[in-house]
Every structure is written in structure tokens, then in C-alpha cells.
Amino acid sequence: MIETSQHAYETIRYIYREGDIDLIFFGQILGMVSNDPDDAPLNKAPEQRIADAISLVEFLVSTGDFYVGRTSKGSNGKYADIPFAGISEFKEMVGNIFLNEGLDGDNLITCSWIRKLTIGSKPPAIPNRVVELFS
Image (cartoon, rainbow, N blue to C red; front, side, top):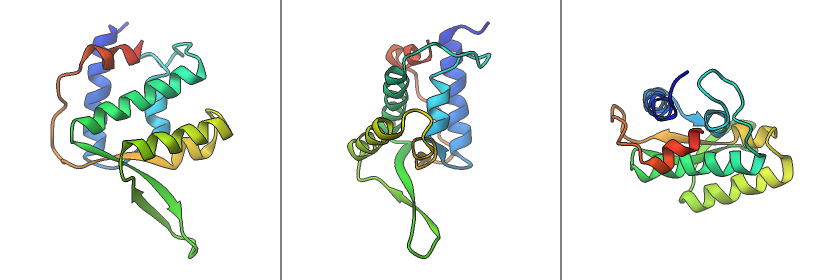
């Protein structure tokens, strides 16, 4: 089995590679901190899973390489990606959706995302507080 720090490093590397291609939905981030490298559940309470996913997003945004946003359906039926003004707005929306819909709500999984600002940037050193999110 992969050690937690190695799993954290590989996951962050994946996020950076995937971020060069497309946005990453919050549901993906939620899954990353909810399961071990073999995709077995880490047996975290739902509140802990949300808190850990938000902490991972906060770390990624703090690097300056990512920003947060949401997808919204317009009156014309088309979808638009809208950046949040900041991490606080993101945290508020995710928290409200979690309270209203739980972990399996479609809006929690697909409405918010992170997008990479700096295409080609490499992952930074990962602090212990972030490694701990994967255990």
C-alpha cells in the first residue's frame, strides 16, 4: 500500500496535470480526500470529508495556480462558468449545498470547481497539514 505522503504527492501531481487540461469539479476533490489509493473509503464522517475537501481547495488556491468558480445555467439554457470573487464565496456555497443536499447532491458534486491559472506550473512542496487530508 502507498504511504499517505506518497499518495498526497501523487494526488496533487494529478490535480496539476489535469488542471492543465480542464477544470476539476469539487466532487472529484471530495473523492480524493475520502478514499485511499486503492479507492477504499477512509471512513471519515461527512462533515470531515467536506472540511478536508475545502482545505485541499484552499491549499490549491493559495498556491496562486488555481482559482474557484461555479457553473450556472442561464435563462437561454446554456451553461456558463463563473469565477467566485474569492475562496469565502466558494466555501459558503459549498457549505450551503452540503447542508441542503448532503454529500450526494448533484449541485455539490458538479456546480463548483477549480481551474488552473498557470498552465504548465509544477506542484509546490506539500505541507504536512495537506498530507493529513489524505488519511
